[in-house]
Figure 1 (spheres, rainbow, N blue to C red):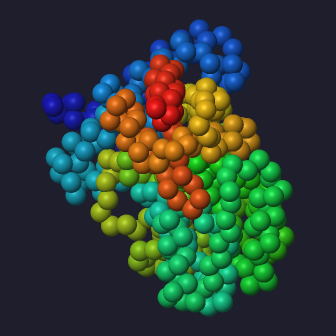
Figure 2: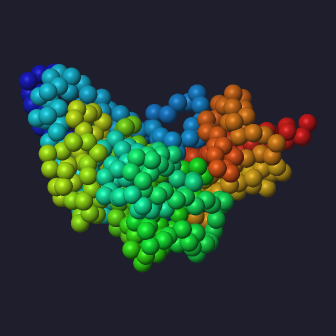
Figure 3: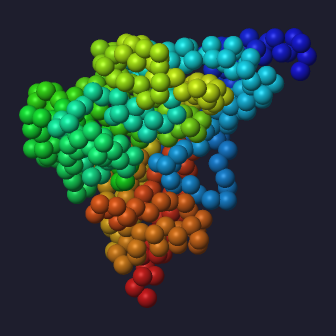
Length: 432
């Protein structure tokens, strides 16, 4: 790299994904605009079924041709431009880490915060950048000024890392952690809200809600739960690990006080990136998980005192946002919902096959659970991979026994046809 190239690179590094010269705009902007025009209809529901348009999006990924990955609910692959951004920032960092990290890349956090805030529909002063949902939500759970006897209401279908955080506070400090349980799928908002409400007492301080339940993809009516909880004087924390970057919403729409998510799921940001949102007037009372000079500060940045971390991963988030916004939140949600229903409607009438997730867009989107009578979930997962090279994940947890299937925007109809064929063959073979 010549001296002029280096100066240009360093100048671009500060602007990075937030400039007109971003990697996304260099690689995709013209082709995607043309594909959008050729798609004709701007209605997201109609465009969701336009395979020519989505084939252009699919080319932005470098997914393996050796397997069909239908476990995007765990972690999603990053688009090629996101990978390239991380590689470029990593190469630059290693030319002189303490200089390039702290004096160059660290300057990109504030533009990134603004970009995330725009996507989330919030103030940048409410957004903290971290590594995943567990870190975001545990920061809030451990930071809340709860005392012995204070109650928290959650469910047995919440994510284990969050449940364990409450259990640790219960064991160590005497808070009371109460869990309700659901039999999914449920298509009754009132019944869901009522279940939470019945668990609330005058000592309840906090209600924990998983926006999209990771086990089977049930969408919970967060806004209605939050409104009910507020009527009882409770605050609400939302686990948005699977909803942010997938569903077309803004965080304030949920009416909650606290929200955490993993950006490496449906936003397809670099693996190991996350975000926390705390309502502005609540920041001061939350203690940071790691040390900070003024733990009672009202500055959201107090939650980012993580020490040395991966600046390349952090800055790569910007290109993921570019990729996401060029598709559009509504289009993305409609496409992935269409893909989920495409395969689910084709297997639900197969003898012995059972769906564990609603097909109603009010109660589901990407994730769907499926099982075959007489075939243990783990055996079904293994057969799909060993015989058909289809990667899913088995769920055996709290009355849920199925495999979890999760497509993404790069998933092709051909891939789903192979999955449907595999389910039909496995279901037929159990009788012989």
